[in-house]
Image (cartoon, rainbow, N blue to C red; front, side, top):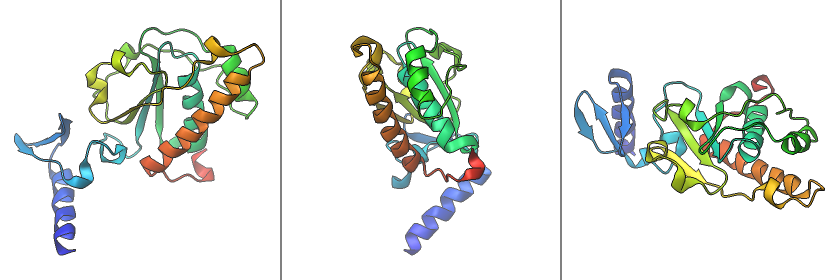
Length: 196
C-alpha cells in the first residue's frame, strides 16, 4: 500500500514538473525514457496523456456519414461539455446520411447539421484519449492514430443492408448507443445534467 501511494506521488510529480508525451508506450520526460506504470498501460483510455482535463474522442468511419455520426451525436448528447467529440472519414468525407439523421431524431438527437470531415483534417497527436473505428476500417487507419486507446467496433453498414424500412439503421443505432455508454464508463466521465 505504501509502495502504491509512493508510486502515485512520483507519477503526480512527473505530471506537474515535466512535459510528458506518449511515444510507443514509453513516457519521455526531459529526455529520460521511463517505462509506463501498470496503471498507465495503453489498453486503458484513461491512461492517455491529454492536453485537456476533458477527454478527447475521435470516431472514424469510411466516409463519416452514418455510424461515426451516430456515435458522435450520442456521445456529445450524453456527455455534453465533459468530453471533446470529433468524427471523421478515413477514406473520404461525404455528407451526413439523412436516414441516419432521421433515426437519431427519433431519440431526440439532431445530427442533420453535423459536418462530414476527412481524417486528414485532424492531428493524431492532439491528445486523444480514445480513437474508435466503427466500420472495420482499422487496417486502413494510420498507426499514428493507434498510439493510445484504439478499438474497431466493426458495426454493420446501414446503407448497404437496410431493406428500406430503416430497421438496420435502428438496430445499428442501438448498438452504437450500447458501445458509447461503455466508452463513457471506460473514460470515467462524470455525467450530470449540467454537462448537457
